[in-house]
Amino acid sequence: MLPTTYNTVDVDGYSVFYREAGDPSKPTLLLLHGFPTASHMFRDLLPLLADRFHLVAPDFPGFGLSAQPPRSEFTYSFDALAQVIGRFTEVIGIKQFALYIFDYGAPVGLRIAMANPERITAIISQNGNAYKEGLSDSGVMLPMVQYWNEPTQSHRDALRVLLTPEAIRWQYEHGMPEPHEVSPDGSTLDAWYMQRPGVDEIQLDLFLDYASNIALYPAFQAYFRAYQPKLLAIWGDKDPFFTPAGAEAYQRDIPHARVQLLDAGHFALETHAVEIAGAIRGFLDE
Image (cartoon, rainbow, N blue to C red; front, side):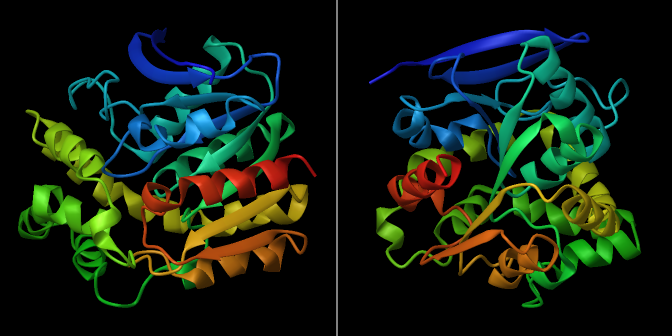
């Protein structure tokens, strides 16, 4: 088994932590995490693919082990995250790569793809939404929508519950057929990251800016139609945030896109790493 290495690089003055596995001469897969996690969400997947691919998984600024610059010095927006991660790929010298986009990783990765279409060899979207029909209408997102529509302090404060250990654990377990099979390691580490000084305000800034991603959905979709990237949408079908309709919608703009639904929730990788790795191998080796 090839080892995973743990590295830090300076990107325009910001320290970016990343995990790397596999042979750099092989095709590169850039793995982009979501909320409230970091690159550790790929800890089970990397060893399963390292014999075939060069794998790179960074932590976004303000997440995981990457720098957490003060809000007075860094605007925590999805544009800014994409700018740093796009530059990160240049600094470490990867020229072309496939994208694995999950949750927040989708709007970050798709911004990078739109800006650099010639560098993207394929996209794996694991519960990474780019369509309005993929947004859940179950009510779980209502407090977020209220904050977008009326960004008052009270609406901001109402979202702090999403940063608690209980809410983070719920994200991991909801929709999983056997919740007791979900390791507490990931959610416990995420909860620790979220309790660090200043992280709450960073995350609340990103909650507000998430509306910018929905506004960009038409642009993401225009990119899909124009460039027809090779795409696999592999989706936990009981995700409380992003429904299977979001996976199926990719085929409207990319008719050859492959859709695979899993009996899982949002964090499908926690219980389906082997299945997802197999799907990625088959997809990228075609």
